[in-house]
Image (cartoon, rainbow, N blue to C red; front, side, top):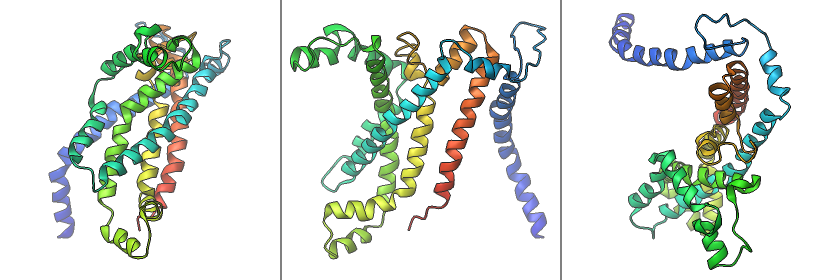
Length: 301
């Protein structure tokens, strides 16, 4: 009877589950397998092209580039992680704790304001940042720092220098994505039992001690989840580069996704582009897998 009952339940939900499996197979599994196959071929999009197998030649070409574009993109990808993840995490927990404080009113309004950049188009925010960081005193940031505050001796050409362009990209990414972490932390903070804070207060713990001895330890699993997603997001930089610098100056701000786009859709070198995609996928998988193992060992209480 239990078997028949379970079979009927599976038959009832199978059509709905099948839709999800078909979507995953068509839009995830097949493209992934196809990309791996192309990375071992001299692939051409021309009709009736032979597309011969070349083994690891595409992977070799990636590292034999005389301009070291892949190594530069790989360096920038790790710099994006180091430059954005700590700041993004700190701002997320800082604003979440601040909004969650008892004296702060209109919590839903603040939550909406912080989450608004998430749902705003990348193009719109890119145009905003291009205005803010425009060259000369016509840019808002240069106008404030140069004309009003006198901090700068002369306006900065933000997109013409490597480090200033990278800082511009990082600020763009942080402003666009920090609201996601704020919302996640707010939900986690509201789930912490209040009696733990009351017990700590009875024991004589002040606000600072309650934060470090109660809040931070209980948020550790959520923090790991957020940090993993922030790292994955930093590895997936594309609109941040494509809409702001287009890889300039002199292709120095390219990251792996933007370099893949250039190789595949501008240079029509699908084999090397696929090889870079496979290597990036393996890198992200290893990083995510090791961090997920840490999450699996965490306990909430």
